[in-house]
Image (cartoon, rainbow, N blue to C red; front, side, top):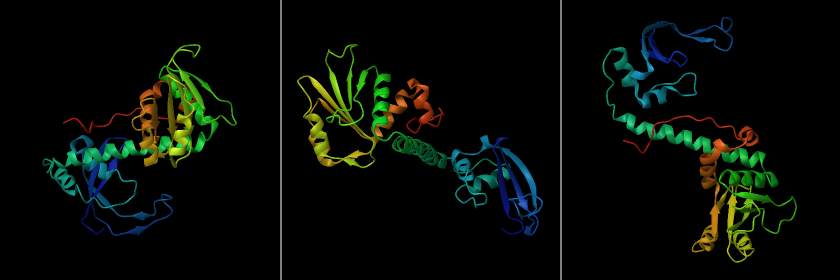
Length: 257
């Protein structure tokens, strides 16, 4: 930075952007404010509400870095200082999908990572049974130990006699599940029964090929599992909400114009 450069300070608690100009040379002063020894004198010129900037400009200035250069939307901040309309507003449309997409991706990563770390093995079967319960199924979870390839029995009626009976196998691993595991579960089915294979990871091409065309077999990978969790999260009990804490937020709709 040099004398005369413009600087911006986003005061999020006040929901405004302070815009100023550097008026002094660099000073190292460690005693006044511990943790902030690097100083430049600034003349603050204008305070602008955040609502006057495009979403892209706000996203760029929201960097986790303490000090950085505004590159892509610098002209918006210069225009705001001069009291002019923001140029090139069309760029906001390009930034919204990026912002929303990163929020969604981070949330999905958090859910899968948390399940993989905190619900390994049999606890993951209990979690999946709870999820199926929020979807209207009654479930019986196999006890810990050898389960013969079936971790959960799910059904709609109270006693579990009326079809469809769903045999569920779950895998808390993050790798790929292959044809041998899927076909083993499918071999456990009796007439009119259905199979559900749920994993935090993915399925190999051969496993998908085996399942294709079998209407009584469904493969649920990590991505689809997260979709189900988000759809039924509000119905989870406090135990699982504590394990996977999520907060409802609203973001721009990427599909709407």
